[in-house]
Length: 221
Image (cartoon, rainbow, N blue to C red; front, side):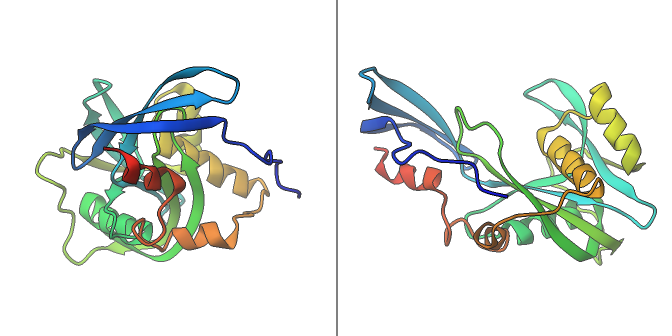
C-alpha cells in the first residue's frame, strides 16, 4: 500500500517569534507570532506536554481487559480506562508503561507488542501517544502502589464487552478508545504496517529522539 501524499512544501507558517507563557512539570504554553504564506498574520497558542502519553491494553488468558477506574478532574466525571501514564524525557515509552502496569494494577507481563502511535489533539498540542498490547500477565513482585493523589479501582472486563462500551459512551477515554479499536481491527485481519523507525521510538527516550514539535520549544523565550 502506497503512503498518503505530502506536499513538497507543507508548512505554510513563517514564525517570527515565540514566547513562553507558562511552564510546569506537566505542561507548558507558548505563543508563536506567524505570517501565513497566503498573507494572513496572527498568533498561535500551543500547549506542550512535557511527558509522553503511554498506554497498554493488558489482556489476560481469558481475553479480559485490565481497566482502571478513576475520577477525571477536568471533565468532572468517573472514567474506566486502560493502564496509562506519562513518561519522562529520560524514560522510554516501554519503560514507562511497564512501570505503570505494576504501579496501577500490580501486574507484569511477559509478552509485549507495540500497537499504535497517535497525536491526540494536533490542532493545539504537541502530545504524542505510544500504545502497547501486553499478554501473559502475572502479579508484580511489589504489588500495586499508585501515587498519593490517585484513587484507583481495578477490574477486568471481556474484550468484546469493552468494544460495546465504546459505542455506548461508557468508555470514552481517548487512549482507551484507540487501543481497543486498533486491537479490534487487527483481529478483523488488518496487519500492522508500522515503519521500523517509528517502532524504534517505542523503545527510545524522547530526549534521544525528540519529535519536531518538542524541538520547537528551544526557540521560545
